[in-house]
Length: 229
Image (cartoon, rainbow, N blue to C red; front, side, top):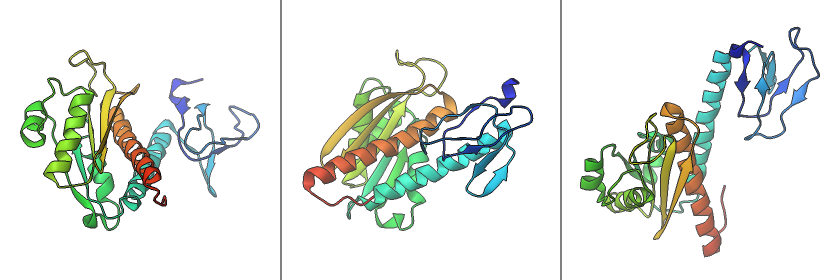
């Protein structure tokens, strides 16, 4: 098998047909978000359309799906704010989270603002970060608190971490720290991704939305509010 024909698919269900090069029965992926297909994809059907996908074509389709997923998750966050303002403080995601929120219709009603603070000096000056290292849960927590204060928002999310190919302050590449702040409650998490560079930043941005959604849902359950997803 040619290495250029090897792919790993993460996305909506696919139905794979037979191929002259690789005959076999049709196969359907059962899970929408965690389906994996490793090997040659000769022909794929999504909805009613058929395509012959090259590695480049699959990469492009995965990218489109990732954007769609980010937009959907951002809209879900918006539906659970219930009048509260939202703010973002980003480092390793470089504005991706804020961009996802800004793409939701009516964002001007609840998106207070976002700050990309890449350097530690900027984090200290504008977000009040005191952590000795910006590659830590403490830094993520202080960034989220700083964003909530700076933008006068009841809900905030922050990202920081190592997306380069070298360790920083003893932290391995692909390690990202995310903090979420919801009406006085602060939660921090450490995530270790296999990717670096843009792939790690993309994963971190989507994970930030996942973490914020989970935090909002817990807050809704504790307050006895009705979930709107």
